[in-house]
Length: 452
Ligand code: TYD
Ligand code: MG
Image (cartoon, rainbow, N blue to C red; front, side, top):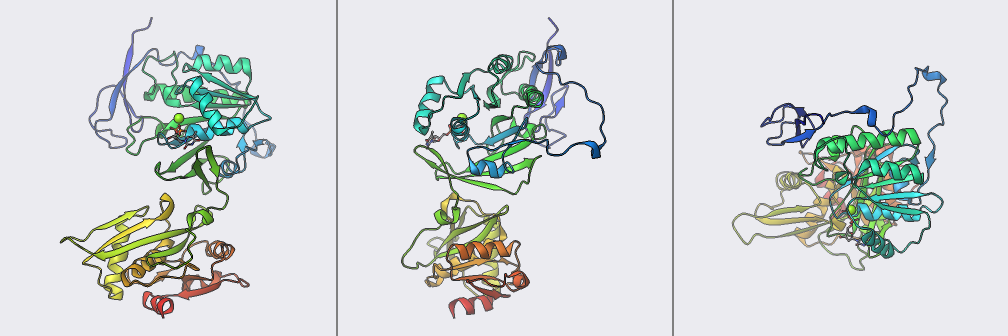
């Protein structure tokens, strides 16, 4: 047996070092180096899959159309993958524990009727998986479950079964016998991913890898894998809310600006094909402190409800709190309202909430947010048939936003009567629309138009 060799790995970025270092020179994090045992690091002769060597080809000689896409039964997943799963691609499916990664991929495995799927779980027992499948309530004769954590055994079973789709739940539980360090360590994760990549490329079977990510990055892994895989999907959301967003952060076969939306129900995840309808509370009467923003997430237009509560501060220091929105940006908007429009907010508590547990980063939400704040502060309800899309500048000007046609089209489709946008977007307004488009350039002008 070879002498055990140890190497230190940064658990944050995966950098290697022969000795322990306090601060990682690569990513700048402190105290992230952990010693891992590597035994004869690469005994390449034992690797499961060795691709045949190829010679160089002229790029013009390569015949296009070789990327075969498998349409999945899940439209939202197809959308974020760029129109289906590419044969032989390796997809990393990341997200916080408990967000619903296993549920979604088991659901996909169960709904793939025509294809043989192998779902490998290192986290749950067969009984647990069976219970979950019953809960989801789909019956499938073509879905195989394997509870195994050794990558060599997984490949052995996969070679015998010849599945057309492989799901690995999760990369943190896998280990290869070639390396001595514990499952979940950087060197294990890296080696197992490299093996899975080779498997996907040589057999043409698409592989989904589930990877846990925590907010503070305390679980090592997915970050260091991003460069190795073809596509990185991120499953996000608040576990206390029912909505989940699926984003692409990297895609070698499509754009990264697509977004998928799901709803967590008692029987698995449900695709939300018209998110605007579910994100807005249906109200008969207009209430104060609520305004609808026409935002975009990637390329997808979304109508979301912004809610504000302004009340007199009971204690010396007024409180400001924002859920689903950047607190510093809220402070900036409050300062603009105070300084440019003369609204006295310094002695008020301001609470802001984006409904549905959604996080908004689109600056186009600014206009709806100031409207909600003023509506609450002045106790004037805003018509639920109005919506807003505009960024607010420091001098109180209303700045243009991108994709205005799509926002207007979505507002029209949802049956809004009026949309308020920046005057600098005027050129891009489509000609024959039924919605009334109000263009404004300054905050004062906006308030006059809105409140009369
Ligand atoms: P899970 O897929 O186990 O999360 P992950 O694999 O990302 O760690 O999802 C766990 C949560 O999903 C769990 O708290 C219960 C909830 N859930 C439902 O609400 N409905 C369902 O039908 C299922 C299967 C799970
Ligand atoms: Mg899981």
